[in-house]
Image (cartoon, rainbow, N blue to C red):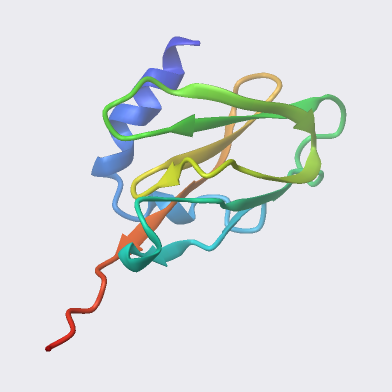
Length: 117
């Protein structure tokens, strides 16, 4: 699946790509405060039934600076929670059983507010 590596290279260059396939893939939360720590649990929900008539999907996880990993092989519709390993910049991609990219989502953190003491 050589094309998967090419997608990873292209993600930063495609500013709006984190919204590709908006109806098919959702992550909750999509953003989180650094006050929560570096890693959080993310709920991932997908529904590719409008384009995947038979077979299932694959969900890949891309973490900055690391090789993409297959996270799940699943039916066209489902949901799952990550462990407490989701971090800023982590991207989830939804791919059909033929390797076609259906959707992407990228988790982003926001700065923890500075409090004056």
